[in-house]
Length: 447
Image 1 (cartoon, rainbow, N blue to C red):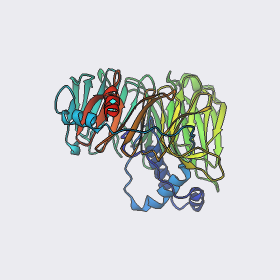
Image 2: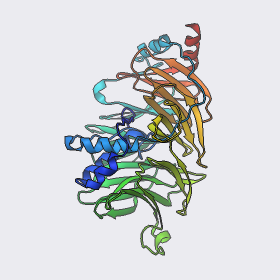
Image 3: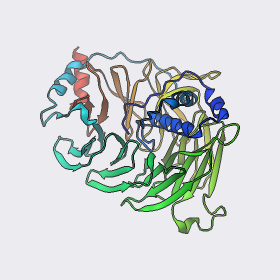
Image 4: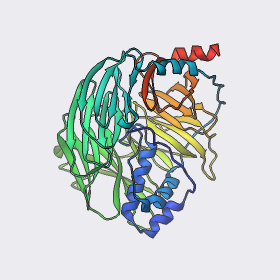
């Protein structure tokens, strides 16, 4: 989804549980949790970052307490931030030429544009349609639609656009539109797997639904959730499309808990299940689990407010790693590993320095990748490339922790993403300009 709303602001840590105990508004609790999911998940909230708009002022207090409960997850700091020289001249020259075909494109800020890289090119989504460009900024195709506000999610070469708080979903690849869906309820969360199949969580009035669509847009699985105070929060689908995992928030008791349920998407696979429905369950007492992803080497990986953990496609919990820091940003990379930008330490925990970027791999091992040395205000993960920023200072690193480039912008940057080779797409409120990371480094040396 849109990457601009991915941060969490935390004031308190345990107020959420007290709020749920009061149980004044279960629906408000659920919507607030969805806001949290949107805010922190970068590669998928089922959405690659972003957030759904929640306009009800009555939800503000609940939202803040849920955010307080979740904004606690890990980081680590082993090296100081390198000095970053100003390379504003490199970006300024590119941005000023953004109207030219060679350098990039320009657009009106009212279009609510969102860009996503996809291997051999990049998508340009707006409220009026989507275009795909190759890495030389040649327009390949154009599809039109009308949405008042959009949320965009990407996985690999696939990207989908949804109308925020709406029912429309459209899936694309670099070859064009794959399918278009009019869902039976309001879209809350979406996940795309490696084949372009999708899991969609919906609010359908007095019930919630989990739907799975094939790569051609056919509905292959549907589950209804009508139990009071049980809310689907996030979901993921195995790469082969056979197993779907759903994280539920259970606010029916005195204390909250999260329950992970695994389902077969094929009726032939699930016909002999004793429950007649899910085939495995994992419970996490006192936790919220707002991020769910899939790792081909491990199975499903989950990011909660207290730990990172993995569950195999057979439904067995494999490992769990305790969190020690608050989380500012979090993404799944293309391998299904979790990349997190850390905030301050949790109380009573020996954590890492604020501004640290860490990776949790398929074995649950935490690896320190980089230390910004200050609060992380931006993060984007494309494949295994990681871009992290603080204010107007940015750095490109790999999943092994190698620093590829650094620079300080002279103007506000909306988004940065790697293209082919060492090219970067730098996006402002009205321009998307292609620059070479090597030029940024050269400008830094010259200054």
